[in-house]
Length: 169
Image 1 (cartoon, rainbow, N blue to C red):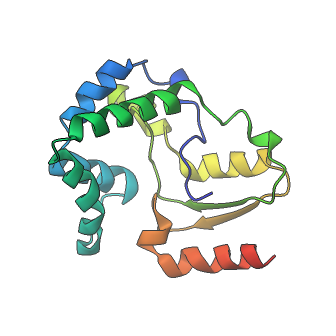
Image 2 (cartoon, rainbow, N blue to C red; image 1 turned 90 degrees about the vertical axis):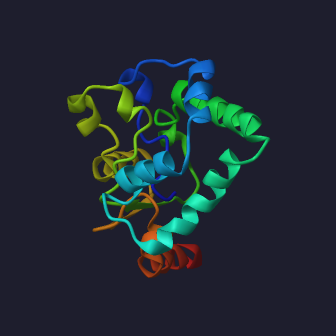
């Protein structure tokens, strides 16, 4: 698992939003909102030109006549993530598990809907990675310093090496 969504239960921190409300939020997404979110949540305030390609697909969706359907699917996904947390089930995993956690990741669903104090405590992937590692017996935890939510993009060499070693074992 690479900085997976689901390491914490957001419904105990974030007010519930209906699928219709998530949908209305999604319909307003554009280049600036996608970039702002990725800059703050994924890349810890540091933007490189090669990250621009990550915006092509989601921004392209917003330009499509089918974007309302895509926005609806996204809203359904948010609702599922919010109402069906998996963090309580990690102890049931029996398969060999590798956790690769970028230590600068602060991704958290609905962080913009809560107080600054709650937002600061949400999406603490260094702590969440350790907690999840403790819950999954026999798992291996790789902590990547100086890296955010998408290690395979931000530092591919540092990401792929432990992944390949894990797959060999």
